[in-house]
Length: 240
Image (cartoon, rainbow, N blue to C red; front, top):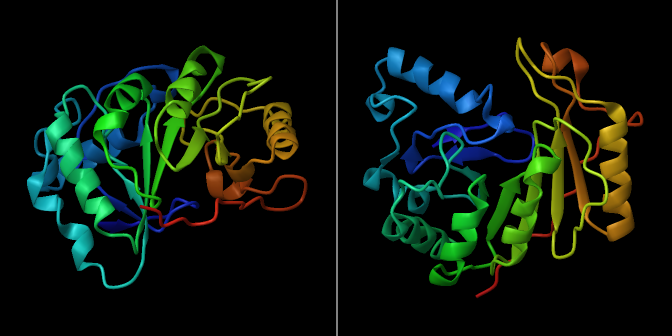
């Protein structure tokens, strides 16, 4: 596990590592950069590199050791629903999350088609928040895949936001996170796109979280929108 600076979580848990690039949002992948760095530092867990997906059975029981309730981003360095992650391993991860109701687990994927295909073979307790990444209008079908799952809490990560997302259907969606890309080669995000999404969330009764403007120096650009921060989140559920 690792403490996280991500504004909407507390820590990360990575039972799998490695991935590959799928759509435009993956272009400047943070996990790829970090994997190269960790491999160079000699960390065995990342020795296979970024392009090889590896499952780590040694990580499965880690959440049982956390004494206090945690909010946990699952697989910040990979994608749990990557085609090279066996369903049996995903079920092991879910079993751990099911048996740790004191923790809130936030799972995020770009492989929404596999997410939907596997949904009825997974147990969705209320402490599992399931999200999909939607960076532009070319991948909005991921929202429909998510909507058809049995997840109790469903969310969207619109980061890096690379274009406008008008007329979003947020039926069944509990939370929307918006953020601009950060880093030396960050692609710009327009304020009008953010404001439009904020209004859509307000009109459809969906929690809105503005993560960052991003850019070359994300600390300098900050996360104020309309002179304030937007930190809305769903209420925590613990359901069978």
